[in-house]
Length: 450
Ligand SMILES: [Zn+2]
Ligand SMILES: [Zn+2]
Image (cartoon, rainbow, N blue to C red; front, side, top):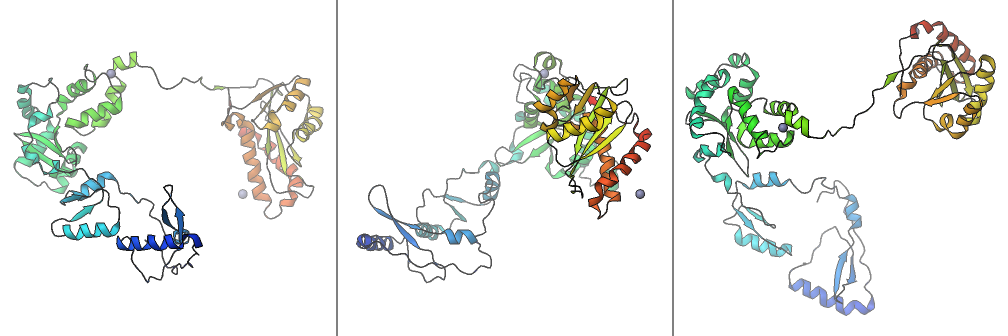
């Protein structure tokens, strides 16, 4: 147990209820006799509490809360099974079930100590397969279905020799040549890859194989020559036994017996382009309508609207900026707002914009409830304005105004260093600047709408 540098935790013993004193005494003696507990003078102590069990007997519960609070816990207390098996390969394993008490385990341990390396209080599957000498494995295991005939297996060596890449590897292995580093550098990725794990390459009856080391099922994989790959893919995917399984299953199937550089990619492409699969399987992806583009034809046809903020509160208590942009002319209006309620926004829109410039045909906003709520819709209906909004999570469909927002924020950041209170007075300047620069925005941002 790791407790770091913290001081030992000590806890005062709790008082035993008078009625239980006798029973406690008996229980303690029993535990001592069975060597479950022993006396200790450790500087750590935790208070036990007597609890009555369902069957009427008593039991000690120990209040470890204080200790637990300072213990540094292991985030992954249980090792992975695979790692365990790999670790135990080297040991003779004793299996102990139900070690109920540590002291008992200790005794068992000492009696075993001479002939075992490990005592495991769990039953662990024996790992014997590893002992099998791989070299004894028959090549027949390479062929799990009948489609490769005997003669073809013997032919395999010849096929591999014809394959330029494998040929090279076989020659190196046969003559036990250790090629120079620069020589390997110049080779194809396939050769580099296989030569990197040359210790796992073996020649079996003149056929190049790959030793697949696995604690459960070590086996020899056939290194497949280019000429055979298509046939193997066909047989691992198209035959009745393979049932046109998907990419993952096909790859798993291939990996049981074969290996080549780019197996995964080849298999993936093969399955993707399989005619039968494409004709008969249902697509998993729902088709979406393509997002179109919207172009306004006349001034005031489409008004983009957005609320910027909250910003620093200005001297006249304004925190938000209402930004309005006409899509056709790119004319921009900005109004400071104290808050972003529907009433405030609508009032500003009517007083500041519509009363001066007239009604737009369409108002486009994001999905904020204050600009897309019932009340705003009602106002729009009164004024015979078509109300549209952006698609969810796609603010770019309100691109016109979002792009202006960026410019405005930039301007605010540039000009108002430490003078945030002046936001309102600088608004005019900022707006003027944006209008002057409007040419740069013209047509640069096509917005999309549903
Ligand atoms: Zn298929
Ligand atoms: Zn500058």
